Structures are given as C-alpha cells and as structure tokens.
Image (cartoon, rainbow, N blue to C red; front, top):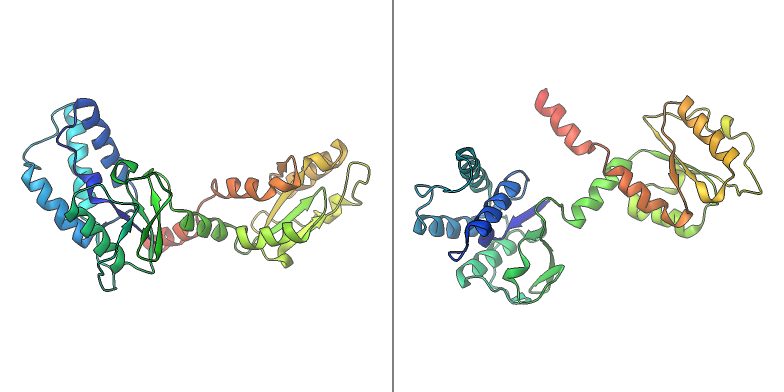
Length: 284
C-alpha cells in the first residue's frame, strides 16, 4: 500500500514566521517517522525548491541546536524514500482544484497516475485545495486525502484490522446472533460465520454451563466478549472467571450494536501480524 506525500509539505512557505516555521519542521519530522513516500516527479520538484532556498547550507536557525539537526535528518530520510510507480504517467484533472504551484500539481498527477492501482492516499493539507475534502478526484479515480501524518489511510486501516482477526474465533455471550451482526463481522473484521460462537442469553434467560462452553478457550486463537447490557451480573461474573481461567481478558461491550466498533478499537491495540512477520524475517 502506498501513500504519496504532497511535495508542498516539504517546502516551508517563504512568508512563514518563527511559529509557522517550527510547526512546518515538526510536521516534517513526523512524516519522516512514517512509511509514506515521495513520488519520483515530486522528489525532483522538491530538490529544485530546496536548492533555491539554500538548503541544507541554510540551517534551521531556531530552537536548540539538536532540533535543527533532527530536522535535517528527517528531510533527508523522506527524500531517500522515492517511489516510482509501475504505470504510465497521464495528464488528468485534479478536483477540487489544487492551489499549490502548477509544477507541484503536475508532479502529483504524474506520480499518482504512475501509482494507479496501488495508491491508497495522498498526504496533504487543506490549505492546498480549493475546498476541504476527504478525497480528491484524479480523472475518474478517487484518492483519499490524508491530513494527519500520524494516521493511516482507511484502506490500510481496514486491512490491518482484518489481519489481526485472521484465524481468530469470536466467542460472544449476551444477546443473540443476527444476520446483520454476522455480516458485519465478516465484512468489517474478516471473521467468517464459522468462527463466530454466540452463547445467546438475556438478563432473564441466563446461559447454561457457560464455564464449560468457554472451558476450552485458547488465548492464541480465541477472543471472548460479553454484551454487558444483555446479561445479569451473575452471567458476567461467570464469563469473566471462565475467560480468566483460560488466560483471556474478556472484552465488555454495553450493547450488541457496538460490538464491531469495540473490536476494531481492540484490534488497533494489538500488534500487526504483517509487521511481526517482517520483523521475524529481518531477524532471521
């Protein structure tokens, strides 16, 4: 997955005051800490602009000396991540209108079309567009506009959630399975119906033998969750004890309609299997 960087994010406006300069360089440092890349055409535009500004000879001249060095390292790190897409560059219209320099706009269009099919987002700033938007249109293609460098594009986020839940079994106590819930688990979490085990119950209708039903839970394979608004305290307590006994922390959700959102939030606190795999490969 690819996120391209708007080249204007790497060139401080000449009208920047000290406060704006500091904000600009802090964003550069933040971008450097991500995996976002600069396109081949944007790279050449940025190099030309930096040369005209006297960079790197003209150092960052505010803040502690270590900050200036950190900024220079960050800029060099970003400029070392140049990506040239496998496709052919095309001259397509951008909407809403781009307010940056015409050459920078052309670089964005060329890089984006070269990355067609693998481009997930463009990291930019609302100040460079004629209207605030969540996505820009490149010809007939829509590309997510990412404003916060710390965030990942929605497509990447959704894929990461599904990687976390791949192969896991979901065990729910409280309420009851519905077609819409099962469909949500499959489409938003990647959990197939066969991996959903729902112990249906209500406050007035407690489940039987929950301790036995959850007696074979495996922390490497299972996720346990209680819909607290649909069970009695006694049922909650049985579920908590059964999960703890098997080495799991039982997740708690107040209502059935919020299960998916809760599980997505939980998944983001877990390590990414793809990252773990890359780390293991590197260590090997």
